[in-house]
Length: 133
Picture 1: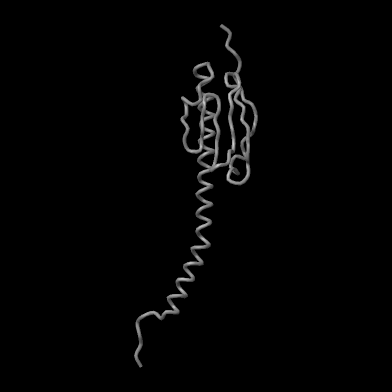
Picture 2: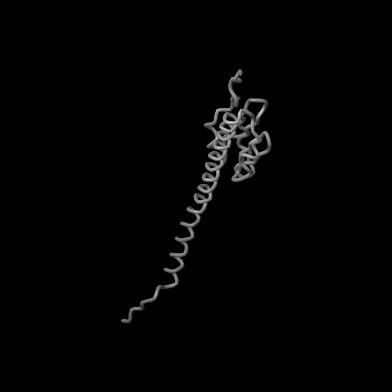
């Protein structure tokens, strides 16, 4: 009897089917991981911009132009008085400067914006108490 060293066609088909099933299970999880990473990066950028605005206001004594502190980048859109955080096409949070106050509003804390659920939506004074000279 002669033994062949090659794989039979059924063995090859069986291996390809198993690899296809594994790929179908793994690919959606990889896509979700990327979205979660984007949301976490956007949240980090949002918090950093808010801290930078507060620090700039305290050091200079005037409310800054937000767009000069942090340019539009990485899910963050800035104008002179607003900072908007978005993941994909979903707006998650907005920080708006009104006078001497920074007001944070959460638009969505579900889906892609789940990491934003921990942010407290409120108004924060930027300059605190005025210094009398």
